[in-house]
Image (cartoon, rainbow, N blue to C red; front, side, top):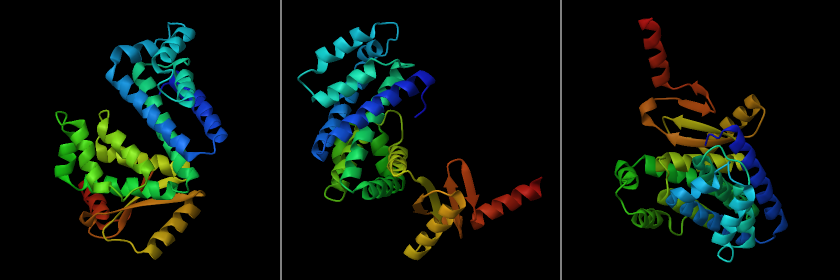
Length: 275
């Protein structure tokens, strides 16, 4: 998600209000409700172009935008949800698209805070990553989920049939929303992004590791410790087996790529010979 300066400030203000409300509640069920209601608001904004345009109109009075959302949502969502939406619309956003991005980010953050409170943030991250690998590894499933003519409810039901009883409620809600409204993003990429958000919630960097063979638990622990030492911060590993590497592994952390695979070394050799 890329936001311009005004939108970044607006999102920061709304996140602060969100975290204040989260700190004030002891019920993770309330956080689940808040996240789900924010996703419902998101769905409405996605479907109503004129509404999101009006709410992001910086030339209008903030009080007028607040009155509009109170008229729409008062009595239909919890007071906490209404407070967050008011915080969103009374700030200045660079575009209607970025306002929608902000609401989506707030909903996701709310659910990840719930997972954190429940002690399930690690498992949520792992579930999102593994499901992303499953989707990325199935061309048929990716095509079905990417079909713009496909019924959104049918897509959600299809994915739910794969994950029912196997993932946490937070993971299910995040996945269902992504499948229902991918917003131009491949579902596999969206799942990877969600897994990264969960990792960042734990204040860890994410190392995307591709290995020619499956790594043992001992190898994963050793690689994690090595990378943590190198980068002087905790590192979360997301490991994908890719036989095309022929041997070794590649590691991507942010924009940095460490290529220790046979395929990578052969490619480098070919480039050197051609130069």
